[in-house]
Length: 313
Image: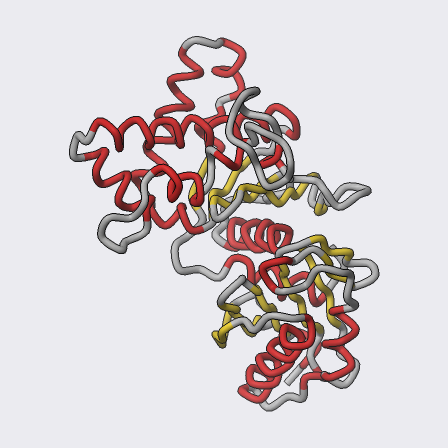
């Protein structure tokens, strides 16, 4: 077996982590899910254990793999392999996470990346392998607890000199709007995120708030209609920002809210079309045709992490 063609990708979330084994053709051949334990040492240990499990399934030692990629929410410096301000993981100060993992895996190449950067790499890979042509200019937007985007421009990740590219959630959306944890007011993520829907519509049945809101709105509930429409308008603003600043050819919507599926996409496309109807400029940009949802149940982030682990991105 040519081990140089195999890599492991780990997508670390605040509560759960998913590791996948990617073969030389870019196909997922095995998965391993675990609970995420807080703290740098625990996060590293969780990655190490997952890599060992997956490598053993194909009869390899971890150090024989082409590489290991790790997607982490927080401020990530891939060049130095450090992670900081990953508060949901219990990591605040800068830690050399890549080195910590590599040392325990016999020196295998380990690359850490921001979770949205690996997600956009994974989305591009899935688009290309589906035969939809090159995805060199792409944004992956995560509608989850917050709002942010991973950017692939001219085939390369755009991180920015201060690693802040894609932080669209902290652009001012409403000048006199809601306070944000970042210290500003009216930030876009206060209106276009899963937590924004949670705040306006506390779950009444134990189901996720987005599902309840969209279902109630479809049933004619006036409050739910207002909340849904305000949310969709804010997501449309995120799409507009990405297209008009980066001119990305495609925007993939992921994150927890994307599991709504067609009701979310239909509402978003309808709002973008509505805006275009009153603006020849927006109509020419054809925003609605650029939007799609991340495929449900596909480990986009873990796939992107595995790809990042085997080469420079």
